[in-house]
Length: 226
Image 1 (cartoon, one colour):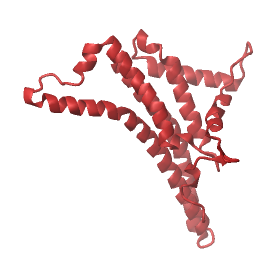
Image 2 (image 1 turned 90 degrees about the vertical axis):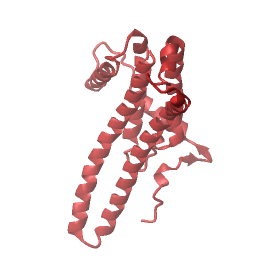
Image 3 (image 1 turned 45 degrees about the vertical axis):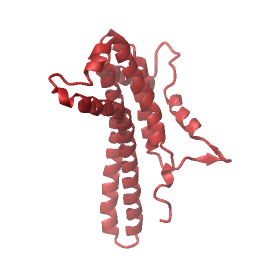
Image 4 (image 1 turned 135 degrees about the vertical axis):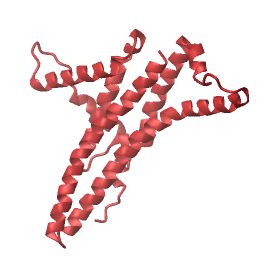
């Protein structure tokens, strides 16, 4: 195949205009607002999964942290639906872009840190210096803890980007190998196709797991600061 290996990660452009915004807005259409007294099965399953995920994320939070429940569950649904839509052939996955993930991670991380310094200033500053630190190590440890604090949003974004990108590249490579082997050795091509099918199933699971991990880490940052 002559297709560029990274073609699926390029921002789609129509008439010279990037359509990333439309792609990002599309997942919201998958979660319609119920307007009936008795919902259908699809909406009932969506509401059940939403309540289950929200319960898992918010069970360890105090009342102040639980005010973030709507934002966190919306974040999970957005990342999960975007990751799953990116599994469709010839589709674009916004969460494979580091800039997109940084745009989600930095504001959420900054919000949790700001809440921590506003509500628990002494405890937030105490996290920068472990208890019992020798005097001569205080400047170095404060610098290290500060750097580790500012690395948190970068780690969030890079983790999501790396997992989604690696999975898509692996599927592309194995799919290309399967097509090439079909004209050489049909039995080997069949084995490769079975591996590809198992990897597709695994990638669907990874899409949901990474959405949950991203949201869970933001939830943990919030728990530490409320």
